[in-house]
Picture 1 (spheres, rainbow, N blue to C red):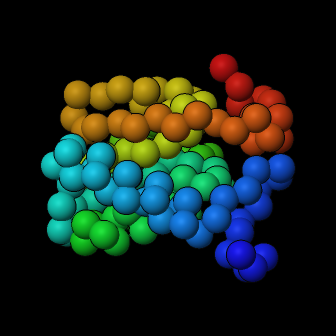
Picture 2: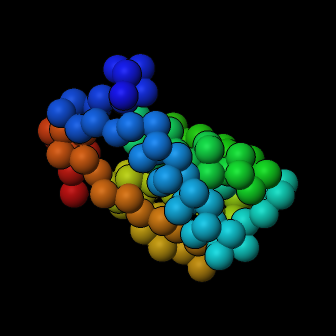
Picture 3: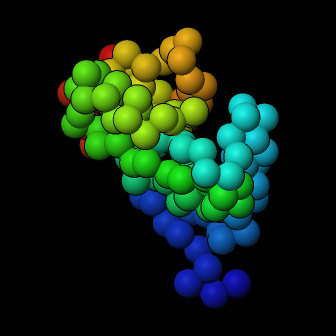
Length: 127
């Protein structure tokens, strides 16, 4: 395996094959939530492996990805989610909690764990 085929985030590493496999798993989960061609998935994520695999997962389904800035308020997030008609939000658990989106009746939410190095880099965000 060449170095170009491995992504490093802090001390964690993932190969292209691992990211692709994660994308396929995400696509399967998204499809089970009713996401298909031309649907919208929103992402409330820091730079992490999920942020690499989620666009690929959306691409496999023909869905669109709308990234949400983690500095947004709940009102701003709600406006964007409504405007783009997102069916699903995928986010780091801490960010979802920060805006109160751990669960909602109007769309499916997938919370991914916040990696330790990201949690350490943003200690004021921890809940």
